[in-house]
Length: 510
Image 1: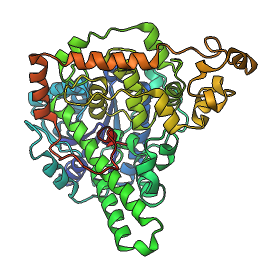
Image 2: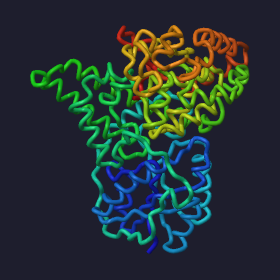
Image 3: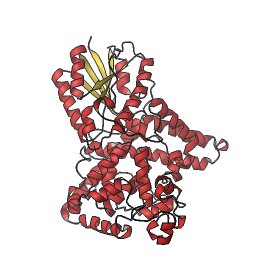
Image 4: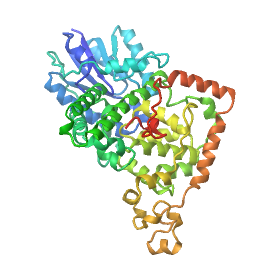
């Protein structure tokens, strides 16, 4: 009897998984498949930490499937070759998967798989995933369809009567010559851990979410911590939305039992909006699959004429720019694989406006650092923060101001930039202003123990902003910007509350 193959890509869960549920009802033997695609590791935006995270989430999925009577099969290599081997041995009736919104490489890979299936008479059924709507021409009606999808019923892991056991070897990255860097504070992988974190956020840690997410310190505890699970698909967006709705409704009905119920409702409502914005940004990649390769407004990008400066790029990515708060953020990201969204925007702002570095190289570097790398969000934001969309206000962050706002006492800087551990708080954000005698007395000589600023922050920022606005001039650039807005612009009316800052649109994600 031919088999159904459920292809797990970035949807490594057993709950709320329509392809898996469909396979369980087919009456055919089922092969659940995860492929470690070696070609993926050759892409500029892919790092071994991404694949290792998925492998660890897949291991948790495998245990759940075993309990349900199924078995997770592992393939290694090109997707079409792995599928062809299964087809030769078993005969594939249907290939079932979720629609994937990835990078240019995954888009091309899916075209190859589609052609393979057609040539073999295999029916490939792709089911909608999360809040992304395929084949839209513009955003009219997108939000309505997304919200409708979020109301679909949640499902438990299905039971299988004829799962085909896997008797092969589980691939490891070291076997193919890759070793992921070790991450500190790495979250526990898998669907069970994702649901536990969702519950603890909604019931314990989320009260300060709305006010804490701008801080690289407070966001670790009071942020949702769910982005790595969303990126691997260990948690469905639908489950997160529905459980958030239930928690908000419960708090409203039981105000007397909830201390600070008003703060809870504001924070969880803000979190719910950010879940919607997450889908909004991934939808951009769905509608323009080459966002990782081509700027939304290529004329503006061309007019900017940014060029790679190896020294500036190296100092930026290694956290040695001489701007203490930015350096601390870059080092935290490299060490942990995560940092809050405002700091991500600041990192890209510094690279784009102060250092005038090209967006694709800096964007690819950051992609490789994030354990929660989500192509749709990442490349949409890279375009916004580098000023190449033509439809977003240019927001060039002041690293010194952000440092004073988010780390007034300098404790965060001292943790991640130990060279500055003895610098008095008065100078912690601008150590180059310390008198030389003080520098020598604390063994922190600027330019020796810790670098002087790579460029003048204030002047480079002003220059970057000016050059960016100049690049928007010209009829051709303006016409493309209008098309970008028509295709990708949000149809939601701007909020007018004073509590929302001028950067609120940037912060709808984490």
